[in-house]
Image 1 (tube, each protein chain N blue to C red):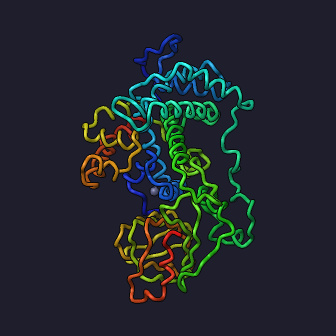
Image 2: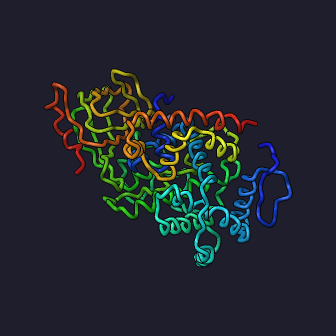
Image 3: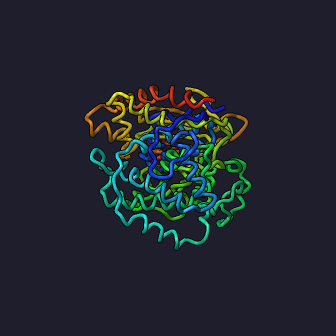
Amino acid sequence: MIRHHPDSNMLLEYASGSLPWAMSLAVSAHLQLCPHCRRASEQLNEIGGGLLEDSAPQATSGAALAQLMERIDQEPQQGEPQHADSPAGEGAPVSRRNTRDDRDPALARLPQVIRKLLGGNRPLKWRRVSPALKMSRLHTGQDQYEVAFHRISRGGKVAEHDHRGREVTLVLYGSFSDADGVYSPGDFLLREPGEVHRPIATQDQECLCLSVVEAPVSVTGPLGWLVNPLLSFRPA
Amino acid sequence: MMAQVTRTDFNGKAVQQTQTRDDDWSRLLVQVGTHRDRAAFERLFHHYAPLIKGFHYSRSVQAFSAEAADELVQEVMFRVWRKATSFDPARASANTWIYTIMRNCRIDMLRRNSRRQDADGCDVEVDDIWDESPESQPLVVLQHKRSQRDIAEGLRGLPPEQSHVLEKAYMEGKSHSEIAEELGLPLGTVKSRVRLALKKLETILSKRGAP
Ligand SMILES: [Zn+2]
């Protein structure tokens, strides 16, 4: 059961197209898991449709339609759908095969947009950040945010840390908890700069999250020295 | 959805049945999708091209230059032609469907113009993130789509400071913090205006379309 959602302001920025690419990626993955927010986002699209209908019409150039029809004539017969690439129900594109990723249970059932992202980032390179935490950076075609998978081993504790920038965490597999609660797949968490937290994975399963971080993370806990590599969260 | 008397003054071939105007555009889109009907497409073009342009470029909105807005119109209507086969009138009105195509197109255009790519290995495209296809979506209880006219009327009924922020967000493509900066308002004020606007529209968005 999903209990944590992006707020309506963020959904509106997503629906209107002003939310940054990396953040939108996380929102999109959440929408693919959350009927509640999917519905809200459809309503926000309807507002867009209403504003479109209400726009002040501006004449286009007289040749616009003719130009367009000419372009259409050069199209192959029958406008085929744009998405010829990912057949529904298939896993990530298999171009870069990596059997370890294929067997990884945490990666077995991901939202479509994350599978697509994974496809371009295979094979995943996991880096140990601390005894309980591994991360794998993901290329997303932008460098404003750092996007990564984080996985916490069963019952693993991550050193207390805070964030200098906004951070979104989307739980994809397993669950973790911190002082505020327990988070399960689909939960979308936004942390503002300065919020300190200390995630702990549940005992029965490891936990996989997608994280999108605006700025480097700094370590504040007394065990900070243990997790020095966290500083390499900073975008390369 | 209930059939209603149209206030439309469609030029030329007026549609005989009594139905909402949205349904007429949806029907044309379906004709384009199923029969590649050019006459239907031309009517859609004459209706939507000026609106798409006006959405981005008009006296009150200058998100794009006139030239860029024209370019966008071409690209959006081209995609409308290509994607019409996947238009499902039960899921979205024509306006909303075209809005989503237009938004994605605009994101594409802005992205292409500002290439700060570390794109190696990145397969994710705009249509993957802003994906409106039913396959990508969780099972949603089928909801009746709202009458687009009700939404437009609801928007007109908002207090100006609320509709203003919505226009800046959607038409100018500004984030909340950009709007706050531009209007010289605290971010919290912009956020709460947006939420108030949504609350006002909620009655329309969630109830009107009910059977
Ligand atoms: Zn949600």
